Each structure stands twice: as structure tokens, then as C-alpha cells.
Image (cartoon, rainbow, N blue to C red; front, top):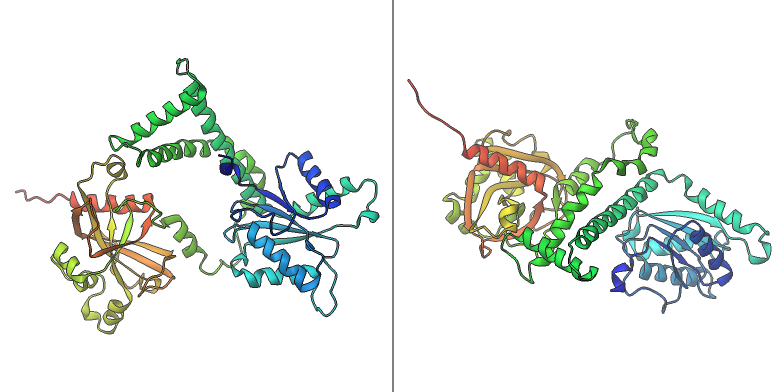
Length: 445
């Protein structure tokens, strides 16, 4: 049970008591929870921490200096910090950060940073290095602790964007705590003379069962409970009072950017906003799943049309050279459109799929324009490359004329799940498909 709490935000890695004790005391005075590691191979977490936001790091965790010291410290860092951590401020707090070892051309600090990034390129553009002076014990004045506290504040002062991320992180944690308080309050008000533990368990069972709408059991109950708790969390996150933590940054946040946009920024952000990975244990036909077509024969059997006939809907053979490039560059796909509630309630007998394509972004202006039958989702970065489609900015199109249903109980052999569209872009396609199916045409005299 304790393992569920092993997610520190702040870590101090230092092997000298005279150094780490004052630092930990100051963090404690500031009510900042921090974990301390001595920096030895037998004092590292079982798995690198993924949620760290701030590290105070001594460079010399052994008697070695130069390359050997840098290698050891980098190794401890890699065992402590997961490469997915970002953004992370690394405060290099060392007596020898600016020293140059015999035979070296770099400072101890620069040598460590290069050694770390060479060993783990994944940290590039994820770490923010800050250097903070650490005087030797004999050189510390009587008010050194006060000076150290001021040093820490100064070192972190100019990282406004990071402060916004930290404020948002705190908002999420407080929102989770609010959901826990509400759950506890409701469970405690049941009027039954049972322990709080039993009341909470009963409340969670009832919530999971209510969300399941019949699909309830040991295998499905956890996912139903998490889905419902997520809804309660969103209510807390969207409460206006939560903005108060980030409001002080409005002076710089609310200024229109005049610099040139970052190359590929829009596409990469759209990739995060519009798409997600399938996730372990996802339903066979989870709403929004994008499928690749493994067999042209399977497609033809389901639609009564060939794959090339689908692709011709956007760029026809009359375009000659462009058409041949299109057939080579575009990947046909199917998109699952079932309502989320049908999946949650296990009401689906069949799955609803619409056919379309994914192609490089360069085709966005070349293919047929959006209409009742055709739709496009433009400019998102494809994060899951496959054979025939590398990671790049792409355009996704769909054709409401090409829709089919398949039994929901098992995956068709000619389909392969690829990734998922998030619920809102999925809903936009679902609405388009429903509107196309509901068109009215009649003759009157």
C-alpha cells in the first residue's frame, strides 16, 4: 500500500550530512515534501521516479573526480529519474561545479551534463540545469541557512512557465483531494453503523455498478470506478476557483506572441489534443480507434468496393501523376464511431465503422473539400509510425458513404488497431455520419 504514495516531487541527492541536512531543513521550513538519497547504487528507487519536478544534485557522490565522478553521478541520476520526466529543474549544488579536473577541458558541471545526455539523449530538452553555489563547511557564515534559503528562491525565481506547470500540478492534486473528501463525506453519511473503510468500499461498489449499467464484475468494476472518478475530477478542475493559482501569471501569459511559431508546434500539439495511444486492456472496438487494413479482400467483402475505389473518392485517376503518388502515400483506414455509453453499458452487438485515409500533410489542400459526405481532420502529428507511414504531420479524411458494421465480440482478421482519436474529434465524425444518414429528400408537386 505504501508503494502508491512513492511519487515524490522533490529529491535531494547528496552524500554529505553537513550539506543535505541544512537543505532538507529549509525545504521542511517551506513545507515542501522532499525525499533524500545518498547517491549510492544501493540507495536508489526500484523504478525511476516519473513525477519529479525539482532535484538538488551534488556532483561528487564518491571519492572520484572528473570523468569517473560524472559517470557515477549520471548513473545514479538515471536510476532515480525516468526519462519521461518533464519539465524538470536540476539544481547542481556542488562545491566543485566550476572546477576543471586535471586533463579535462570542461568544468565538473559541464562534464556531468554531457555525460548524462550522452547516456540518455531522451533527457534533451526536458531538463533545465541551474547552478547554485555551495561553500565549504569552514567558509559558511553564521547566517548561512538564511542565505541558502534566499539562494534557492533566487535560483527558481525566473522560471515562470515552470511555475505555471507546478501550480497546475498542485491544482490537480487538490482536486483529487476534493474528490476524496466528497467521497468520504457521502460514505460517512450513509447512516449505517459501519466503519469508514466499509462505507467507502460499499460506496465504490455502488458507483462502479451504476456506471456499468449491467456490465459489472471483478474484471470490469475497476475501469468503471476509474471512469466515474475521472468525471468527478473534471468537475473540480473546471471550478473557477482553481484559476486563482495561475491568475498571477496573466501579465505575461495574456500577451500575444510576436515571435515566429515553433516549427511543427501546431501539428505536434494537435497530435496530443486529438489522438491517444490504444492503451493496455482497451476494448476490441473502442470508440475512436483507427484501424489499418491488413487485407484488401476483407475490405472489399465488407464494403463491396475495392480499397483503390475508396482512395479515388478524394484524388481520382484523372489527375494522372498525382493519383499514382496518392495511391502510394495514402493509407486507407477505418474509424470506430460507436457511442461511448454503448461500450460502457455492454449494449453493443455490432460496431459502427467509417472508412477514410491518413496521408502526409502536403495532401491537405489537394484532396476533396469537406462536405456532407466528406470530412477531414487536419494537421496533427502522427506519433505511431507504421510500415508505409512514418511519424510526420498528417491529414485524416473520412467518407460517410463508406460505412459498415461488424460483430463487436471479436476483431475482424483483416483489421489491425493503430491508435485512437480522442472523444471530441470522434464525436465530430460521429455527428457528421449521423447527419449524412439522416438527410431528407422528397418530391412534392
